[in-house]
Image (tube, rainbow, N blue to C red):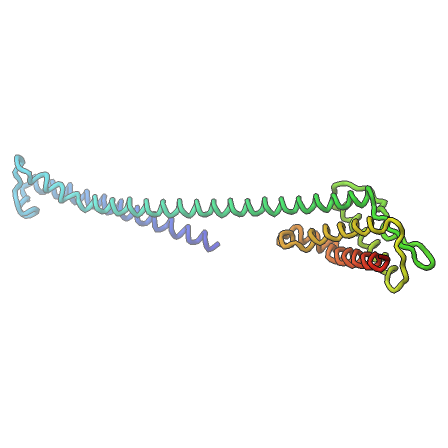
Length: 249
């Protein structure tokens, strides 16, 4: 609103200057015509103070002196208008540069979000395809830490988020089962522990990387799906399983 008021004020000033210059020019030309008529009527000495000789340079000097104020006036007006146009051109270029920078920033935000989205999708695809079916033998039973999710995977955000949420619940349950119990790793535990580490590392990158957290779209998805808590659980579970490997060794 303020910018529009400033533009209107600037336009009014320009119109006023041009109108004033035009009116002054018209009035001045009327005076010149009147003075010329008076000169031919014999009032030249009262008007000019001399009687110009047509064969001399006096006529040219008289005309030059007569129209010099108009030339100076329109030189000033044209200079002012050109300066104003240059200022407007610079402002327009600056505006275009700012818009271009904003568009570039929007494209960068979108590209980072798409990258984050694809990485999360590939993590979900890995869980669905292979699963992390880690079994630890306790005194009385075998605990299956993470089973492959039975959810149909697509590239839609809702499908991916559902699988990641299943991962979070499964990890939280497995971690609760391991707490305070005597556990013995079964044969494939080293391989599965490495898989847990990979999942935890990937989640940490997707959730805790400053590059992703600075992206408003990514941050909104992290908060909306609870990825922060899921990542904390994944790291805690990977650490817990690694402890059992050290004990067993």
